[in-house]
Length: 284
Ligand SMILES: [Fe+2]
Ligand SMILES: [Fe+2]
Image: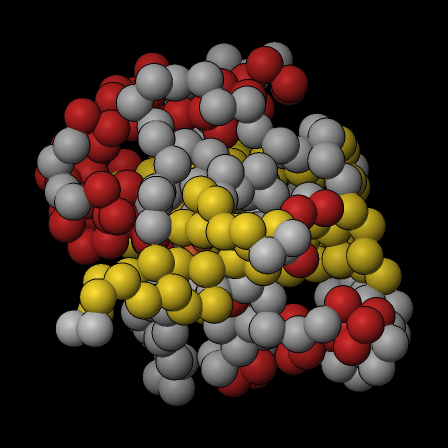
C-alpha cells in the first residue's frame, strides 16, 4: 500500500520540535513512494530552517508546485531551487502577474506589492528553475493531481476585493485564476492540499470531485481563506456543511483560515479537526 507523508514546513505558527519558526505563509512537503514534492515555499524566512529541523532535505525535491503567485507562498523559492539543478516548478501561467493588496492605513488606502519578489529571469537563469505553467487539471505524478483553474460556481464564495492585479498599468480586482490546489491519492483516501483556497474551498472540492469522480475526501489540509471573512459568516457555515457532505475525516486547516474560523471549525468538528502549523505531519 502506498504510504504518503505530508509535513507542514511553513505556517503562521510553529509547533514542535524545538527550533521551528513561524511566519505568515504556507508550505508543505509531500513524500510518496520515493517522490518528494514541495507545495508552496512560505515567505522565505523559515523554509530552510524548518526543513533542517524536521530532517527534510530540500536538495532532494525535484518538483515544486506553487498554489498561486502571492509572496507568502513563493518567497522561499531560492531556498529550494538552490543548489541550481533544474527543479521543475509547476504553477498556473498567471503567477507572475503584478499582485497587490489594497489596505487601510492612517494615510488612507495603501497599495502593497504582494506578488513574487523574484524575476522569472533570475529564477530560470541563476537558479535554473524549469517552469511548467499549466492552466488545466492534470495528473502531475502518479496519484498526484493539479487542480488547474478552478471554476467559480458557488454564490457564497466571493473574491476578496482587497486583492488587486496590474495589467498594462491598469489595476483591477484580482480574480486569482492562478489559485490551484493538489489532490493526492493515499492509502486512506484522497487528500486535498490547499494554499490559500482563493477559488473558494467548496469550489475546489466540487472541482476535484468532478475531475476525479471522488464523492468523499479523506482529508483537507492547508489555508482556506475563511479567516479573511470576519468570523461566523454564511460562507464559513456553508463551507463546514460541504466538509460534512464530502465526509472529510480530517480537517487540518491553518494559515489564512485564521484563529476565529479555526476555533469555529474545531467546535464543530472536534476530533476531526487539527491545526496544521509548522511541524504538523501526518502519514496516510
Ligand atoms: Fe494568497
Ligand atoms: Fe496565503
